[in-house]
Length: 176
Image (cartoon, rainbow, N blue to C red; front, side):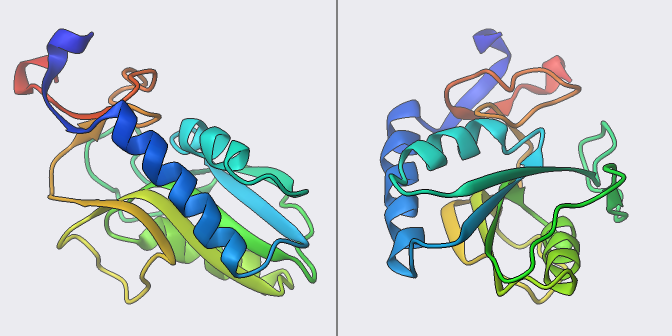
């Protein structure tokens, strides 16, 4: 599996340090009535480490959304795969995702949560792809800004694989 990686962009050690910093930044805005919403499946690994970096009482919800549909580029259409969404009335919601490229998924999710009565909606992403954003929204918390490369590891996948790599790397073309 490691042989399929052309180069490592963000090491396991770098991720560990940055995730702790993000947890501190989120708590600087307050530590009560927080609901962390994980966008599945990609943000699962990142979110688990982020929660452990935040020693406060918080709620966790998961949303199953998709815009890639198994490919290497966003389809441009966000699908909410869950039939019903939790009640966010009066809550501070932090939406956690693995990567922000076009921004369409995050924008649509935040808009939907806001429409359900959230007190506030913030966004936290491990990675932001430089120069790919097609929406005006910017994430509130960003781990790392990367170039426009297809990356895997630390929750990010290609065809359901490579999520369990402890780092973020670029997939070799022959592995695709």
